[in-house]
Image (cartoon, rainbow, N blue to C red):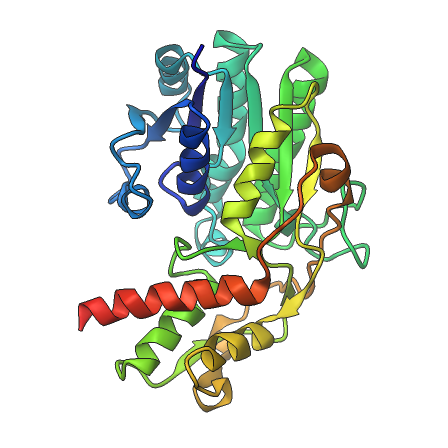
Length: 324
């Protein structure tokens, strides 16, 4: 019997890679489509799966539409990836971020409790919940200290997932994902901002790149690897929380060095530190400990940061070159 999955946030980077993974495994994949979105299909087109995903009208801020989406999809697995996911925007739109990234998860859980309490739920939690880190390496037992409205909203969603698991015996899991990137990453995120600028500078369309704190350290992995961990969580006998990370941290500066060097450029000739891009409350260091994911799920990141960055630069070189 074909399994059915409903994916919120299917228009995002993770949603597209997850949809492809599920389709490859023989799932019927339904994607929740909020009508406020503009072009929701470009990432699905990039992966050539746009005709295989069944889109369902709905929004995580609207409980009624979620109930209808669950009834239509008959989903045995629900992956909640919907979010206002750009940290910088969360200071400018804190209430929207709270409604979509926080309360949105509670709406999905409540809709599932009403329609399909035996279905399995995945919540996209985030390393931003650690914020002002309380341990050198962060794992499932590390205390949270979010430093942005985005991190706070995601922490609410995370604890609601735990609460529904413990209160209603739902199979509900949270993946505490550290930064994960790909050629499908949004242009507003620093890795993609860098690789796009590298391509534009190499093609002579741009001369400089303005960034904020380039000494901030992040644990970066490949989104295509990380969606495998999401799926594995819902194949376990019980729900749980898992840190998904590479276990390696790198500065934005070093990431820039790698990206520019891939096309024969020196980042120091082009990168300008602009205080306007600093966060009101900075997260200086994120470094995940994925030991539980490795031991329980059998999951391990397989794509190095160097391979990831060169993959992204190559993709942006093709995109920018096609525009000339």
